[in-house]
Image (cartoon, rainbow, N blue to C red; front, side, top):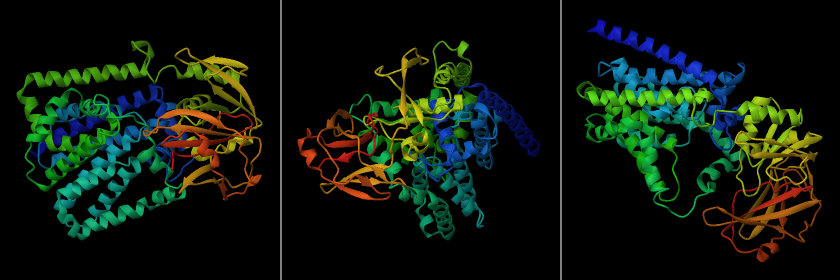
Length: 543
């Protein structure tokens, strides 16, 4: 029996090496997604946090930045994927004889799980640390040592440094076994993870929790719509599991939760399912939000699923069909000529090269497009940024403050209107971008408006003073769901002083707000030299 187990382990290692090589080739041959380029931009400056996500994705990209091209962005993510599968294999191996073909076949049937094996996205390290979390928790339950608490702490902080919703899995496991509250080793794991997470918490404080507030309050939605919100919730959940969801979901309900580990896997999945179900009544969900349930449900149901596959031939056909569809999708992502439709990974070089020839070595400022700015900078090697207009949303470009662009003598602004344009260029969908010159643009992303208790103020977060002259004040009206309802210029407005010092908070006469059409929320923009109305605040609640 031991010989059989050893043979299966060797087969698993061989299959893992083959899969790793395929993911390596895919990572090399596939153009970047917009989000991957955006996270690559994160990695150009290592920090303890970023506007849209915790810092793990940037740290990993930066670690392989010595390699050029797409492979340099994705290399370590392919390794994390192999590590995730190895941890899951070892977690299950303690109580069942795993058949490697079924094990890998089932795992790779989850579309997002397979694709995150070669894409540089925050979900890839999240999956790895989730697998490490359950691997460590299983040993924590059976071993009375003081090594596993530290591994458990590392896995928890790793999840939280990857995706904020990692707390759902942690609380799920805790509620599955409330005796952990009396366990010194469990407290050691928690305290250790909090200590490791403290630098990110300090970063949140330093940035006034702008990232956290954006995730909680700023994402625009609209009035409840069943098909988009709740029905979309169920469709996204099915998308995560692919065709095999018709087998996994029923088995997860029937599977006996006979021990603390199985109970932990079930509670963790249940916490995620319930949390996003409740949230579906107020906002739209996204497919990747359900990724946390893949690993606990896989660990919970694998043994029964393998047994069903051995019994039912049609399930094996379904498994192979699912894998075939996903493999065809991977080929289409990498090779534009094979794809019947244009995908996000296609055609970047053509439009970037055309724009770079016209912009030369001048920094390029994209109006309302942090994604195109990231792609352009990656493929052209030239500086680019996103000018976040008042009707748009803030992002990492605004958080960093445009310092390099203020230093430039001349900048190229890219937008959709042709007024004052000196040239145009085509995007990959053949729509036109217009190029405009900006002379030493005064862009101040860290001039922050605040409105509390009926008092309006302007804070200068820059390390230098700013002359308050030759400006235009604009106000955008937002509805209850933070949707843009219109903008207007505030006329006859003047500051009482002509300079705002670094770090100074300047009280502003808010009388002009009484003359503006009432709206639940509004945003203010202070722009100089005729620049577009760049955003300088989160949504301000009208009082």
